[in-house]
Length: 211
Image (cartoon, rainbow, N blue to C red):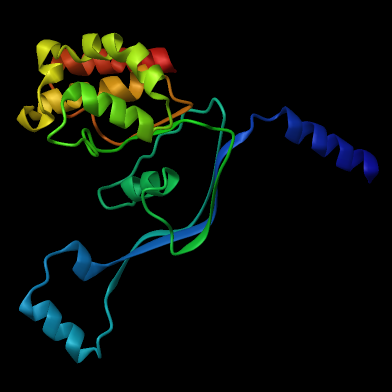
């Protein structure tokens, strides 16, 4: 019995360390918070005694993602893929279950390009702000600044307020920031649909380098 236990410990020690561990995680949303409330839906709620309809996005999810693994989520629209990524990155919290994140200092969520950018700040200033939010020091981001600008191809626009940027410029800058800093974990959610074909090829090549 002791030898079996010792052998199991050795096997566990040989495995890559877990980054994300989800145990029995469930997430639900108020249906009326998702769609615009109409007189009909409010009347229906009143007739039900004020009870709200719930949409179950995730149900009893158990998942372990370890160091070095590349994981893809496949499913139909509305299957809960984006919700799961937001749970993994701490953007939303589950109503039940446990989420444990360990052995990763820098987890970068690339869920919506440009999300979190401050419109009145320049691209350069947003680079620094985004880096600090990701857990990097200002000096670390400044050291990567020229590389970020070069990849984004923004040129002098890097010093313009991002509120004047097109969606493609947002995409270039956000992707450049997230991937140039070489995070421990990069969480990506359908962001390659923005930008021209050449930029998409650059993104694909950068992702292959990271892998």
